[in-house]
Length: 80
Image 1 (tube, rainbow, N blue to C red):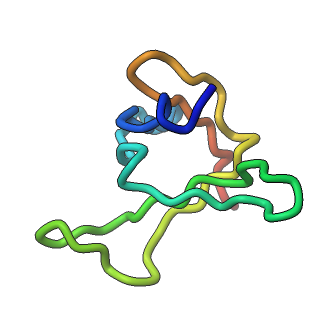
Image 2 (cartoon, rainbow, N blue to C red):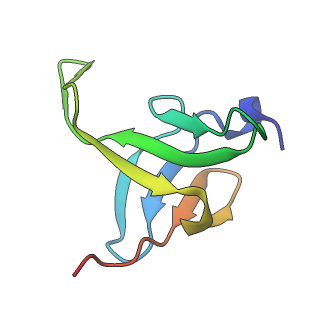
């Protein structure tokens, strides 16, 4: 799958049944040595289209359960 094919897909948390963002408005954490995507970095607050610095949700790649035609389903374990 190409990165351009991921762009525009909604990111949905399966446990909370909530929309976290849209890929394209998120950042990717990439391993410089291997070129593999390590995590999605999703800004959690926006104000008039601007990101609030330092506030983001990090979703490790292994928590992505399914990439569909319209959305990416993630399953992040609850923090204790």
